[in-house]
Length: 93
Image (tube, rainbow, N blue to C red; front, side, top):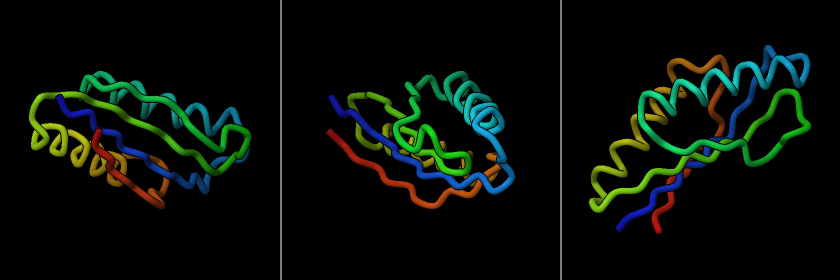
């Protein structure tokens, strides 16, 4: 069994309040959950207006499938998120 964790550090330049930030993060989180059937949580920078760290977890018995899902989520974030992905890290357990 392979557990994959994708950590995304995000910069939201257009956000001017926590409410605006959470709106963007919530929409992304909901879209990713529905599209890829993964668990998503905001991990850090909870009180910062323009920064966020999101953790995304998936599990499978094949590492290739876990890697494929997490890389597709990274591409989705880079292309469709109203923010800039500063750092993306994948870890396996």
